[in-house]
Length: 243
Image (cartoon, rainbow, N blue to C red; front, side, top):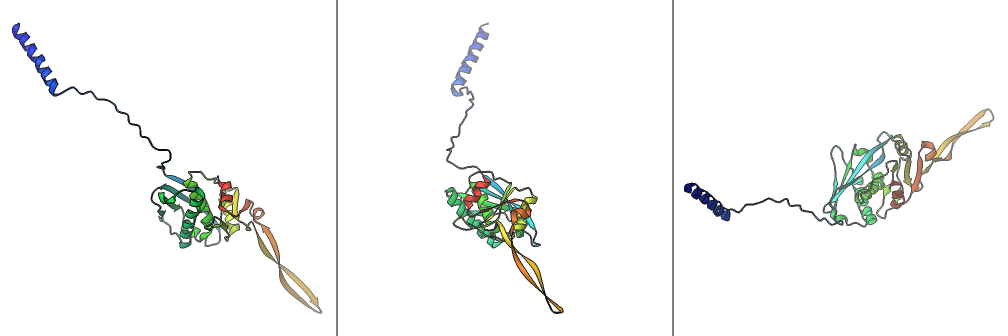
């Protein structure tokens, strides 16, 4: 009996001795809350817009431009997968960035902008996509969704004005074909002059002399194509219809 008591005492003593060297540890669940300033931009933003253009066959076509804006150091990047951007299109992108910065008042040296066009770049060669590129850039920076029932054609100038382009009728028809309800064009290009040949003949003795004269006829693109057309002179005017 005494031996059992001694053994129990020794076990207890040994346990107490070990606990001094190896204290029992109890785990805790630690919850950490990250405090992110609301003024800090950390997310990627993007916007999409339809671009009307004219193919090499003279047919109106539509492609899609995507602009991504994300924290960076002011780079302008072009997705060249399966397409080639023309020099004047690249110039339009640079002007679009400048106009977007003036409009949003953001410091674009803190953003990277990525431009991607879904189809062959030959469809958007030339500066005629400048206004659309600018609108998509502003929408991406402000994280806004564009109204896809509206389309626009026109160049963009550094002061934010929208300049004239060609192929208005073909582009308007392409816009209508994909379901657009409103087509924005540069100021003065909602109509055009078409010259109709008129044959005039005069009888002189036994001979008949005929000449062809061309009579100017003003054509309203909205009526001709069957889509609402509005003229805009500045990027601010166009944005009212997209937002």
